[in-house]
Structures are given as C-alpha cells and as structure tokens.
Image (tube, rainbow, N blue to C red; front, side):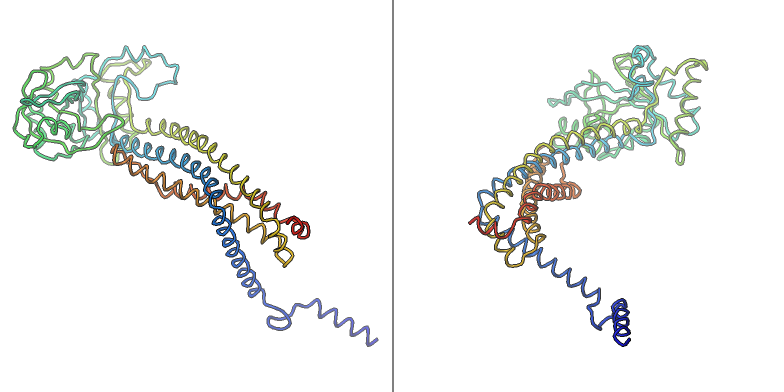
Length: 452
C-alpha cells in the first residue's frame, strides 16, 4: 500500500509543472539561449562562407559575373522605365489636371479602336468665335483660351536665327491656364491681345539662339516676314516628351496671327482650353462644356458630338497599361539573365560541396547538426549572390549618373530598385544554394570522411 501510494504521488508530481526556478529552466531563458545559439551558428556560417569565397577567388569572380549581369539587366530596365514614367507623368501633369482640351481629334479613340476615323476627319476645327461663346456660356470655367500652333518656323534677329520653332498664337486668357513663369519682361495686356499688336514672348531656347548675350526685351525679331517686339521671356521649362514645353516657342496674340495665316486651315490644329473654377470637379466641367459646345454648334439631340473633349485622365489611364507592359517586359528580359546566373551559382555550390566533403564529415563526427551544415552552404550561396547584386547595382548607379549628365534626362537609381535588387539577389541565392546545401547536410559522416 505504501509503495502504491508513493508511486501515485510520484505520478502526480510528474504531471504537475515545476514552478520557475525549481527543477527546470524558465521558458524565457530557453528562448534566449536558443536565439544566442542560432546567432552564433549564423556568424560561424558567414565566416565559413567568406573563407570559402576568399580561398577560391577565380571561381568566386566567375560565379559573380552571372548574378552581376542579371541584376544589372533587370534593375537597368526598371530604372529606365521608372525615369520614363516619372517624366511622362510630369509632362502630363503640366497639361493641367483641371483643364479640358476641346479639339477635333481625341487623344484616345472614342467608341473603341474600330471607330471610323473619317468621322474625325470630317469634324470642323474649333474656332475663335466658339471660344468667345463658351466664355459666356460655361459657368463652371474660370478661364477659356484659344490656341493655334504654327510649327516648323524660323525666327530671325540680325544675323542670328532660331529654326524649327513653334509660333503659338494665343488669346489673352492663355496665361491664366498655362501659368507662364516669366524670366524677364511681362505678358500681353488685354488691350494688346484684343487689338492684335505685333508683340511676342520668347521661349528660353529661342532667346538663347537669337540673343546669346541676353537683353532681348524691346528688340525686334522677324517671323514669317513680319516684325515683332519682344516684351517677355519665359523661364526655361526643360524638354517634354509630349512637346508641350515653351522653350522652343514664340508666343504671339492670336488676333495678330490672323495677318499671318488662315487660322481655320486644316494645316493647323487649333484647340480651346477650358479651366475649371475652384472647387469644380472635372466631370461637372466636362458636362457643362459638352452642353455648351453642342449648343454653340447647334447639334440635334440624336446627333453625335463633332468635337473631342480631352483631359489628362485619358492619358493617365492609357499610360498605366503601357508601363505595366514595359514592366513585364523588364521582368522577362532580366529574368533570363537572373536564371542563367542562378544556374551558375548552383553549379559552383555543387562543386564546393564536392570539394569540402571530407570537412563536412569531420564536422558531423564532432557533433555538427544537419541544420548547421545546411546553413553554412546556404549562407555562402546567399552571400555570393548579394555581392554580385551589389556590383550590379553599382554598375547601374554609375551608368545612370553618366546618362543623366550626358542626356539631361533624370535617370535615378531609386531606393525601391536598390531593395528590389538585393531581395532578388537573396532569393536567387536561397533557391540556387538550397539543393547543394541539403545534399551536404544529409551526408553520412563516415562516408564523407572516407572520401578523402
């Protein structure tokens, strides 16, 4: 009975957890101990990895080439794509997010790609009188302007000339919509615009070509055989992929342009700008403009619009799909390079495991666990890929800086692309090194030592 009672008490004791500090190690201390052990093993794995890379320098360099070229290829594509996207979006924003463009041709085909183009061709061009009518009728607009570009012209001043410039014929409210930043001089007064005086504003590139030393204000230039007095110079805006920069323009009052060309000719592409009043959303402005324009042109309810209402949101949605396609192409182009580099790393790791088989056997005979051997080779593979990734990123950075200086195009290696490059390198290192590392970790210590 005593023995049974003692046995029952012992069983109950075994089932009862010990209090902290009596007969057991607290769970918190065990976790800290395991964490320290893991950090120590990881540190030793890094040391083994760097030593292996240092000893086999030539093999390391050859292995790095694949990953370096792969990361360079994929991050270069991403960098160029990002820079191009930033540039185009900036140019689109310069068109004005609260501005409606009334034109003959739409920026995006209406009714799908099969919409008959001849309907666009037969549309009338926007007219100056229509701009005046819209200015009175559209309540949601803060400004309405008429613009006619005359391209491929030559401006002259004494022996200097500026070729292939654009004469921009504008109504007075153009400044309220475009928000011109003048470096020198002033804009047209309303009286000058209405009377059509022979005055002009120069873009930065035009001024530099005609007046290399500056001092253009008050001078007379020649356009299409007519004299114009320079009253202002627009601040340099930089190149634009959408060709909406003022740098290569000469801006004149539209009322004087009637003396130069027929503004209603199909040779030109005049358009009307309508800017929304503060607090008026674009859909409301667009509906107001559409109703007013149909009324001005006296279209019947069942008749289709014979004008296009363009806005930057149309371009933005189209650009989104374009850049998605370019990004996918970048992944495909860089992916093949990365794949080749990954196979190279895997091959080198198999060779490394083969060379170090006796050392693996000795380590396991001395008590090294499988996960330590696995971690040792896996870290070596990851470190190799990370070094290759860093070299690839340095190449991208150097070329982007050189291209930015030479082309005046902002190619910037962003932080996001740097992280992407390092993450891709680490993932390739894990994938390429896992199978060789697993093979090494599963070796029998006796057979490994015998392979000497």
